[in-house]
Length: 105
Image (cartoon, rainbow, N blue to C red; front, side, top):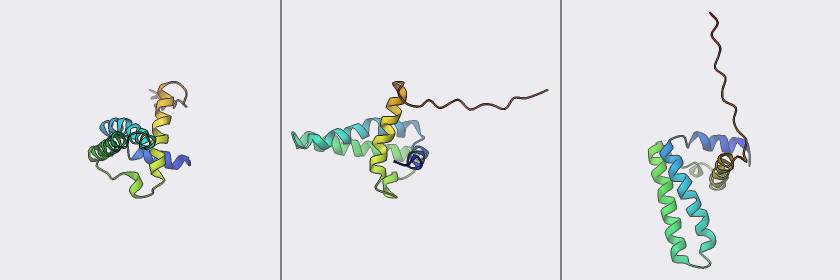
């Protein structure tokens, strides 16, 4: 997936509440998909609640979900979450802190 998709997705998900709701809602949605084969009722509950969380997050962010512009973002969301989880667990790239310009007197 092109890095610009991830960068654009990050830009639309800066508010901490939006990140939290997505961190809960995306796994619920992804888990619901295979669960439909075993228990469609629980799968439907997970799917609906997961999407409600997505839209609540975007209400805090003040923007629309990225997939309204391009359906590929339905795949970018889970990838974004996996990259965040990998970074927290020490498997992803660490971004170097930005250097502050030095002040000479």
